[in-house]
Amino acid sequence: MRTINLKDIAALVGVSTTAVSNVLNGAPIRIGDEKRNLILQTAKKYHYRPNLLARSLKRRKAGVIGIVVPDMTTLFYPELIRFLETELFRYGYQTLVCNSGDSALCEKKHLETLLSRFVDGLVISPAGNGANAALIRSIAEQETPVACVDRYLPNEQIHYITTDGRAAAAKAARLLREAGVRRLFYLGEYPRHQAVNDRLAGSNDVVKIPSRNVILCKPERQKIRRHCVKILRRLPPQAGFFLESNRFLPGLLDAATECGLKIPRDLPAIGFDPPALVLDGADDYSAMSALSGPIPVIKQNVKAMAENTAKWMRAKLSKSPAEFRPLLLKADLIELIAKV
Image (cartoon, rainbow, N blue to C red; front, side):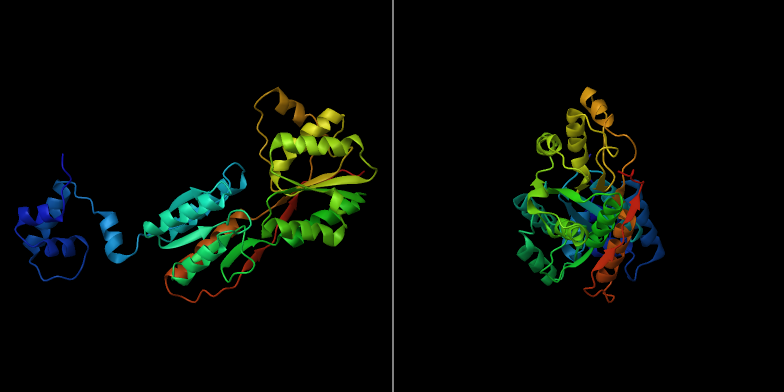
């Protein structure tokens, strides 16, 4: 059955299309109660639904916030998206979520698509090393509110809400130092972006890490295992590991299993964000057996990150004062580490 439109209702009731539109949208109009009720009854009878796309084109507003994140394979971003959707919905906004896969080209296409749909604002965790910074800046300059979340663009006046990664990493490094670690190995992501650079800097503030002890690679389990096995085969005394991302833990556990070591009994380690350990086969059960006890984890306040992002976006869209005032959130350390 063909969908009924404003013109159809106007013909059935015997009024103008403008009159039907004003009545259905609650706009002021001089019309008798009989005609008003007939318009409403006819719309209900034929299950009229407004054309949201046409309304967006007319008003240049869609009631939608676009969200672009670089990775959906960790626990962090799905949790962040869930909180963002909840908070933005409270303010009357729905969301369109895109996954860039940490690809600048993919991110660029997603941004162009979202803008073509007249989203009211953008929440973005920039891909890679911020290759689309100029594009994101131009979007913000054209009065589409843009907020960076988790990752940020340090050389741009683009509002951001993120964890104080430098302070959190320094706290973690101090805990490792107190546990007796004097030779710290750092497992980090490649390519880099500012948020993870902050974590490396914070670790170095406490324990000076020789460049040869900084291992940067794509967080793929087999690659991490190979890098770690080389280290664990010649493990120096008083060594420990800092894991820049929760994705590095499975690979480290695989390497520890291969080398007959237990974490943290033989090798103190600390991670950033709770890990997603999925028991999907014999290798996964074997990797879990490398844990001799709990390891400490830096836990970001994802809920606060989402709440503050949504609050800023609402203020910006309501034309309230929402100046560039980046927010650095405190992270917590959970679990305890065994003494060496």
